Image (cartoon, rainbow, N blue to C red):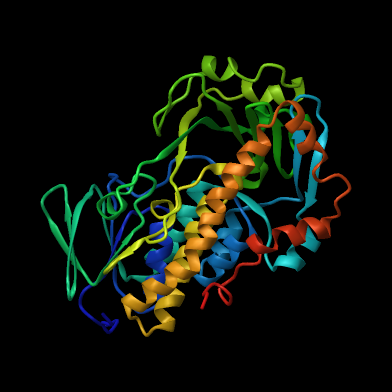
Length: 400
């Protein structure tokens, strides 16, 4: 299973989102041609803002698009958590010069579309990636020499290997693992608000979170501070099914009782919302099957509480490329090392996300414990606690 990169067969990537484009770039840097199969009619991203830790920028740099990403990002001065009932400041972490010195890259917030565009520009510049849109993978066949990926139009795509970067409802994962989603019952509403309509007393250059009983609210600037991202999460009263729909202003306003007026302003701002019913999956011990492997949300779908979904997909892409480099482009060995390097780390994100959701949504005595957790903690102690997460980079991404 060690084709020469000049082999006429491309690596096939299912999915043209952030993970798919990142791994396409990573594979091209290893000498492969790549064919991306995207089920949507055009390449793009839905959603709003996302947060990027230093680990994401280490990944962008390794993929050669660091400057493209940085030019579109807003660099925050701090992260801050307030209690949404009484405005108590639970914790504040500076993300300025000392943070950059410690981790070698900044903390930033950015529109998801801008991340996608930075990667897409990088991919197009290579001239080595073919895109097919309106192409939905339906099944995969393998033999000793490669993979054949069938799509919904009855076309067959031949490749040397397959990377399933086809998101939370991955067809590639369904064929090889077919495990159920774990629907959380938590609903996330996301919107982007113009600066002119955003409350002046909340126009902080920070990743800001207001934590409340069974709910929380997030806001931060986007696109040079011309817009603000608003995200609110609550525990739904009804049974939820994993998916994205248009939100209703009435529904979101029916939650968040007892929230302080300062935080409550956020709920009344957006004219339109998108509504995500969230889910994750139990971490699994294997996501490579012969010449196919999984990446990003297809491999380790997570809740949003660690703000690391896109970051993990970027890390995956870099690590897979490094594993191929380390093993002379032998997919069997590279996929095995990729799994060893990524499964424990991404599982930690999934499991930590569940715990963080509990922490954010604490009530009663648990809320009091949460509000005491970080009292008097210095920036350096916060940085030490984040080392496992933000200390990742291309030089340490491969485990033995």
